[in-house]
Image (tube, rainbow, N blue to C red; front, side):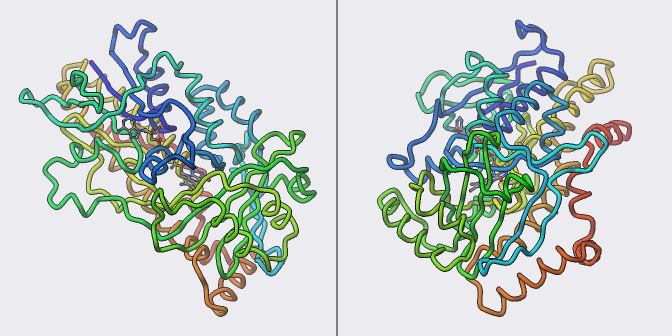
Length: 447
Ligand SMILES: Cc1cc2nc3c(=O)[nH]c(=O)nc-3n(C[C@H](O)[C@H](O)[C@H](O)COP(=O)(O)OP(=O)(O)OC[C@H]3O[C@@H](n4cnc5c(N)ncnc54)[C@H](O)[C@@H]3O)c2cc1C
């Protein structure tokens, strides 16, 4: 069987590794053939990149992120060495601290799943996550070519075409892991009416961020924490992205901006000036230290995807941001991409085993994989999307009353976690306790 992955971001690279492991691919790729295509070779320069480029590759552009405990557990299952490399190159967090711009600590919540062998959130440069996964795949195994579209040929086989106009490639399965502007999505939604309604949507939020060399603040070191501060006119986050002794902080500031910047309007000096103005009255001295030192390395408009009616069929399957780009407030984009890739590999292995025993064809096995992946994964990511959309309101311009309500609410759940549980349910437990193997086993036993 020939499998093509489009996109070597976290979703595509993890899918490559999980498929290799679970389909027991031989080193010479002789049992099944697996290839991966990626449009961008290295880091993107924010000054010379167009908005489309900045959005095309969230994994490659600068900035930092948190890989949640659930994401780290998937990585441990994939390969303990990659897991340990992420922990050794990032900053292992015990806590998340929520603060108000007026200087109050509102809540501190655990950044671990509190299991016997606990996983932690790892705060880390986006580029480092990409590099760890890319090294495990091997750069030589990635074909750096831009895919310009996907279609089914006359024989009904899934195919991709390339921007360099080279010969099209045909496969048995094409996995679209090519981010929020997926070129595979159209083909994966074949037969769905009015596909335009599933285009990416701008959330009207802009994020700027980057890295700065400075001693870690005492509370970051002591509490091993990532700090999130909410104010009336935006949001500011900071934490370490390297091991503590390296004095490397990552930071990001998100604010409401309904006018999408285009290449001509990304003016770094103006953005820096606005950043300083936006946070000038905020009380946390660390924020002032950061904004007085930094340059703006990256600018990200927030794009999300509406809930898709399917993640594929006819030999195409979407995963990661191509299937469900989430609000950045979820802190779950990479973790969900990792969960997708594990679930996909387990399902495909299970259905191919059924095909090998004669109970279905290989084509049916691929089709059932696409359908079951959606049934298992979509409810989970939609729940996360709904929760993230709620928290994103704290990053928009707020009235005084709305600011008070938000701080009161965060303070309340910080002081009385049982009230938080009552109001929000066991969101963190649900988030961190998810078990791909169990759900796949259940689903396979029913088919
Ligand atoms: C501001 C911001 C903050 C975030 N914070 C967090 C966080 O704290 N925690 C977290 O887990 N997530 C966070 N995320 C989200 C996270 O970065 C994404 O969810 C994650 O990168 C998705 O991985 P992916 O592989 O699906 O897509 P992407 O990372 O977008 O990767 C897609 C890949 O496909 C390639 N590609 C695209 N088009 C083509 C083509 N035509 N041909 C070939 N290749 C192509 C791209 O170059 C890229 O390498 C954040 C995102 C943003 C914007």
